[in-house]
Length: 225
Image: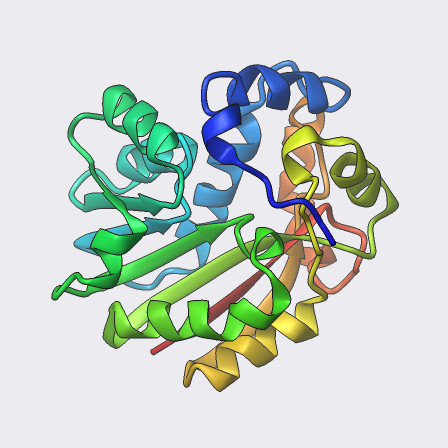
């Protein structure tokens, strides 16, 4: 049985572990957090007023969501109480909720952002997680999820050697797209991302021509409720 990662244990050292893990690609591990938000901006046609960072951890993505969507109210939720405390301390203007609080929430969001969460969820629990996400949505809510690309050997190596990925079960893009369909999402799209490290970010203009190639470090699936 796969050991379940306790992110309370890693909350204090998450950034330093991630920096060590990604040092081969970039001296600034924040590049990868901001990269996803920049990708998100490219596919959105409207400006969201409320954004939920689902599985926000210590708030790395939440910070860039606020930076690039300054008029939006940023919410975050996570299972790790210690991570939520770190996120709140780093970004006091955000609203960070426990999973029990978000499950009881009576409000919905314009955008739900999910970065590297589903590979930590046991496969038999993934449909119910998407069901919860659908419940937090309203008509027109955009749901965007980023996941590690299991077809990329470098990505697989990083996952296999990462301390907080000890419970990881990677998803193929087709599986995540099917989960979106089962949850009732429409206009589902998928493409590969993260082809270049920060040292080669000047080549990122080429990525729009490479999206169909399963060699990117990650992929994203997008849908609308």
